[in-house]
Image (cartoon, rainbow, N blue to C red; front, side):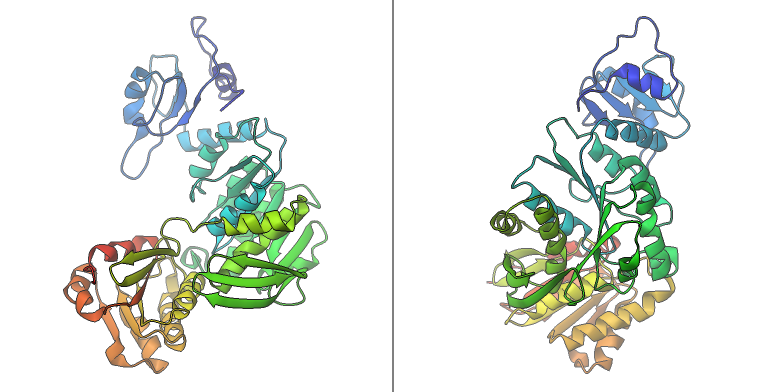
Length: 450
């Protein structure tokens, strides 16, 4: 962090330091007293398991130059606020305004992190890029990401997540994006928002914080997003496989589970991963690269150097088994994408699927839909875990998957008793489910196959 002083923070929150309080440039912002270092500002945030306000004294003893919390302390280095999370956002918004650089904001139901990483990888061929680390895309993670901006950065790439109305509005107000990417509108969090129309409305909150005629990239194959094509208050650019898009894919070939190729407006590209969904993730990176005058060869270098994030199509070899750990999260779109990749393997294919959460009234039909889709993709074995396991089974059997190849378990305890009897040598196994399902724990249940 650069160019932010304690006096600025006192002033921002209407607090008054004593005459003995020395103004100093801060070294960073922290919300975790365990990793706090000297001369950082500590924000005491209340979470589900811990209350940062209980650690204010510890933070001061560790050399925090300033603390922002919800309790009153005699130490003048503590600024008392009503809500520490909102205070964090206020400071992040103030700090963001110190940098006159492009800010690319990415949102959507599926593919945000992968799209962000591909854009970053391409832009790094020419620029010093600041970006969201991992998926720190919420009301705490994104402000904390902004505090890592420095004068060396040329451009910022931010991921924005949401599960309710007004969350994208809040994040966009802080980040003030200059360029937007909308990946798709699926059914993630539809249990909270009620419909895809409402999900679209919530995502589009971003636009109210962008200047007129700013560039907006949309997945033009998405039935909800393509309605933005006719807007004349922004420069809308569409991408996808349909030929009526501004950037239209042709000659797509899934060469293997770990490689695909395609052409875009007459130029060929190769990805070190399979699946149409990864092409959708790559298209904004190509377009943004071209807009920033990065050569097509450099764009290809950037795409080829992209690597999947942890628990996102992470290929693990365990003895003779190949395990696709895509357990970070799930909804109907990402489930289908992962199952399509599994279908590319020549070996026996096993899908171990956990629940898709936050679907509300759409839960039953969505799980049946994925069970049916699994059957149509040539998957040999379906193992379903959780309260909706039977819905997966119904969908698969209705699409002619043999019932003896469909297994249902209430939880991991039940799964543990049979999983190693079901799995065979040389199987390819997909692990997929919502974050709350913790499907990665299946890795600990699978015995090594030699």
